[in-house]
View 1 (cartoon, rainbow, N blue to C red):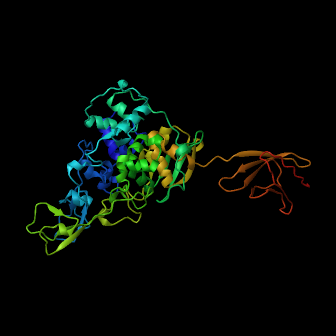
View 2: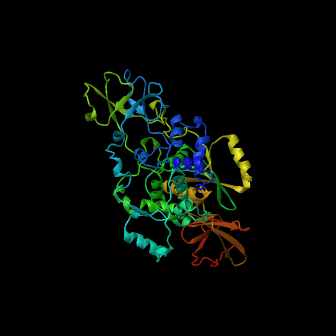
View 3: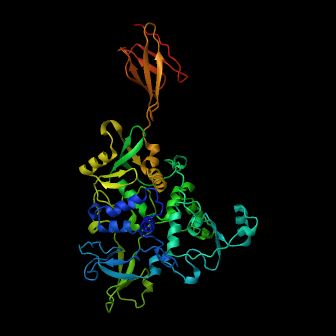
Length: 512
């Protein structure tokens, strides 16, 4: 997802935005390196890696300009016990030196299986032809499929059809990518230059992921500031856990985002692409992210690619200018007398010494402010005052502070809302906001006097909270869990009555 944002903003600045999801990437770019645990944390978020990187580089039209994954070790690899590698040359070995010595790993060893030749295709077979509909449904080409699609579109007479030959290059693929999120018919808008109409705003509550429907992952506590009159979340104050969870969304593959949301109103065309018949053989392939995108507290609980341990002759004779490591020792041509194993290190951890607060992308034991449109800002007194001034609200009377917990379900709802709206927190967390108690007035008529009792429904605790409005001092504040019970003073004199209807009037007789 981070790569999609970077490519569209770099080459298609006028392309319709991805809701407010773009703001997450922009904030990573704007934040200082000092806000991250290591320099590699910022790099891996600005240039997210994919587990399908090698396959994508074999595409004839590969629009991703991310550099190929590299492997680095400590310069003292053969002289010290520094037998670890990193994919970032800004990482430091446990000895303190930068890991700048590069070594090579073949593509077959990186993915752990043969790649095949170019005639086999990448994700589908090159020996077959396919039909792609305007809403990106891909099927094997046949006369029956073509005829059925034409009938569905209302073209009974082929004389109404026109055949157009188009050239597809870098520009067209980028435009098509942007139209995934902006159009129900991306092919027409890409190749026929049809004007792109703004998508109508869709309500998210209907398809919101409910708590309990998804399992796994940790929870993190967040303090939100809600504008009272319209229940709009202006800001959220959070720790590094929730910030890591938001930044980790940049590393999610597009197909994984679709599998989490499962909502055609958000990624309808992408869903059609993922459900295409030609991909049935790849359904068993797990959707993973590289191992170094995991944090100590995973809210989404996305599976990560297993860490790979490589083997290297120790030391090779003669010493080559560039080391070459293999996954299997049997692949070494000349079997050396001694072989050393090289294990990966987590580039988010300094000197391989995790903080007592865990590990993640941003600095530990810090507080952050997240706006409704997902602008992330390290918290300080100046930024807090600036945000309140920008909101132009009265802090004491206009704002309501609430503390909620964010689980996997809430984070998915925030992700969904961020792709099609500018109010990701408000739309994604609407179900978590504390409901205003329902006010119900019930009149109590004693023998000699009249006074009113205001009852508030207590949520989520069962029962009623009774608040007395009037001058009768013998009534107390009471929490009623069964029949509505009114206590007078002293406690021995108690009267109770169960009201069967919401607006039923209770007539109680008190001896005064």
